[in-house]
Length: 389
Image (tube, rainbow, N blue to C red; front, side, top):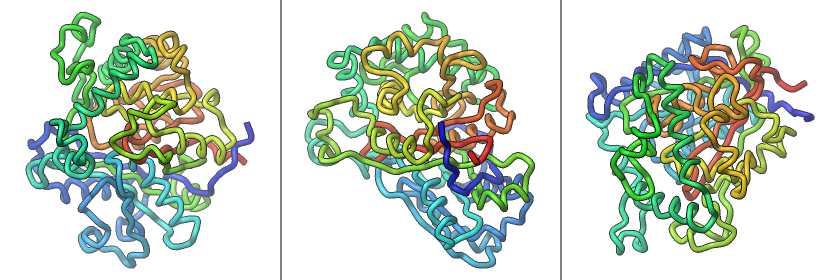
């Protein structure tokens, strides 16, 4: 495993409490400013030193709107990853990497915020941007419907057992049970509770589905050398990638072969190539789980298992900390910690590698963050406790 460093590291993280959608006492931008201030404080710098801003998925909180309230001395980079909703969550990290390595910016914040009370439902923004005439003509206008169809095909065509979906959900809620800040804290997701929960869209049940929450999260990246000066716990970015495999674009993807549908093949392949790591080297995955079907598909396409052995590999025991073969979503993830379009997963990756997770993985050195499976565009980022030199 010849890991090659990017020269970029995380110096600080910040996250607000998760509120039920529409229940935040603060408007979206105020939530975001709180998260960025917290990340700057964690990095030991004034927020005014941030000179780059990166987000994704039709975010309206662009850098120029944040620079004034933060007292930014000089705005040098402001970018958005288009397409794919949460598919760009790790992609925004790739944009920050590009800005820092190219010399366009020195201190870049990657962020996401949602607050239904001031900015409307996240579902509406995603639906407007993703669902075209082919879907709309057949009454499909929500992520649950489209991803339910694709999950059903995974079960029928690829032979993925429904138990794999349940294992993903139960692992997330198990980890949330040890995270007092998780919205799913206190939920004991037994087999009976899972199986008796109502259908959202078959084959997806209530506990297969992520929540919409009001919250904000931010991570600050800078050069690895500077991060070592700022903190005694830098977390290094080994590789990041944004990707989509053509020519099977968009809403007809389910008609193509080969089919697992996560759209993570391209980004995953390049993360492994760039880092020199393999799936076997990874100690934990902060898996994007908008719904459990896409999450299973992502683990297959990222190389952690195959469609043939997914039922054997994706079990509750294998997916939980501290002793599972591949712990996932150690804070509870999108299903059970809170849904912030994937940005909470990047924060948890840093917490895990710093030894600050509520569900530690002893000796964890590498943690993968996945972004938005089963979207037109997907992404991934690999973090480590050392810079690989």
